[in-house]
Length: 326
Image (cartoon, rainbow, N blue to C red):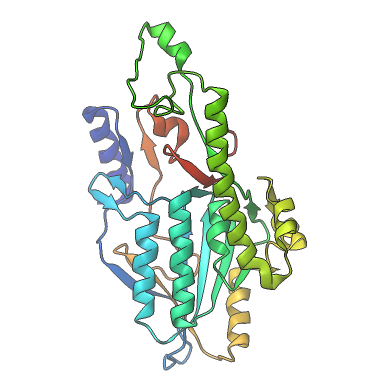
């Protein structure tokens, strides 16, 4: 079935099924497979660079799809690194990040997994920041030996956000009254059905401050050998975003370049003439270049009043996430 016909069938099915979220992506296998992106010229080399993608909102929750579940960002990272540990021919890992960040815990787990991989294998990790590598995207990049930005990268947004909604006006309009019976006065903190008290705002802010401190600690550890002090990072960590050049000037990244040039530089650094570039894909067929991605189409949310249609992949909780326009 062609991609267009698959999308059409999925859309019609959704209309008959009701208001549901249908990801229009052709199904593939569950097994993680090795794919060669750049073959070795002599085809006799045992030297490899591994290119791993981290994209979209970072989450520890699997993405439920029409035919099953897509692994979460955390699961995908763990699975890929376990496979990489088995390959002694990998000379460098390029982590290509195109993400606005995501959950605090998901970001921290992925960061920890990368640190463990570095320590256990001594394989250098280079973070390649693409279009957007902000907040949690930059958090996980801090686990790398070096951070490289694409010339048009948007990065930074170092900070924490928790989003709440107040729909009291809607309750009055509809004529519905919500009552919450709790074991303590703060159990329903951040409830959308009432205003927060000043005390509760202080409680939420204290949690945000602690999580922000951890973010700064992570960046400090990652940039300590690159000339940035904690005080300098605190100055940069007011939540703002930076262009690639601004990030380079401030010390948040080490270099601005393109992916092919980065690969060539890594060959020179490791004194390698012939290198195979590989990645791991999950049952979507072979990708032939370093810019290829698994074929996909965007999800369509047919429920215009669902939380996902308003907030996207933003779920309740604390986030290292850049959410422009929210």
